Length: 430
Image 1 (cartoon, rainbow, N blue to C red):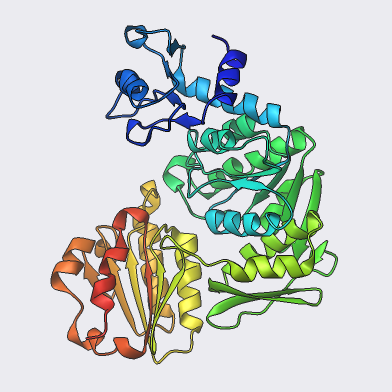
Image 2: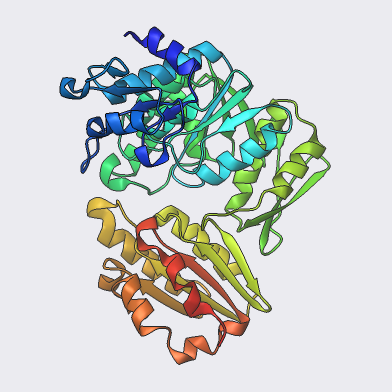
């Protein structure tokens, strides 16, 4: 069965399933493989649970005419996504970057959905499997797609672009994320810029932050729609942090968001630029941005009388950690507490980058610093250190810190694997 025939079956199905625990009736089951599982062995189970067809790449599992044998299930899934994207023939917006991808994607979706029937990446399904699944979740009713692209090594964004073939693109920033896979900051810049190169080669358009000199330098001659503090930008933006929430202004429109921190101003501005590019009324852009509430441990604001907790435990790298610390230092609070967890995927730079953040935290106007994790525990500092989240949970906060929580502003930030949201009970006022 060729890809066109599989696509015909897909159009008559309820969608794609990859997990037999979540089988949709009349779906196509793709038997993907992982380090610890072989999806081929679940093909018959998928059919028993209601799947219409199953796609496998090992002949011993192709036991019925409802099981399609292909050379490579993952590649077939990607080819199906590409075929479906071409079949729909709708505008696709792609975005990548080191920090702020998911928040910016959610903001762009909130704005563009004011005018279009949109489908956007769910959560952070932004890799070689997530991008195809996002494209395959779009239907004939979809008018515009928004695809987040993540990467931890060079060549990955290029591969994702070949599947999604975006018409519009945006890179949030180039920062110190996934240094191990990219081989340093220059590798990050080169890898993320693969989105720009794709757009240039396919005569697409990119949204460009004129306030970012690195991006400005790498764009070249491709078509751009610009935003920034420069009056010559297509959408001139005024940034005006109104603690604790980020505000922006464009034209006569002031956006008062529910997002914490100055670093979120650019994310708001990018979404406003997309709205302006797609000719959405300023009032609708304002409504969309102001109604967005962050969730999933991303810059969540938790208030309890005079206590404020900024929970940002979904992801962390040196660039986002520095931005969060700078924001904490500017808050008007009688007691500032930073609880910082290890940053992952830094490779050989791990020791130096953790020491850099430990030094930076001590330079800022922060009353108490608590460092958590194997890497932070090895740094030279005057902070309280715990080797793991489990050790912090077991030992608890010192009484001197506990007594200040009622009037504190507390930043909780670390990589996903640290699961620092588990310590929230330690921050309850006794």
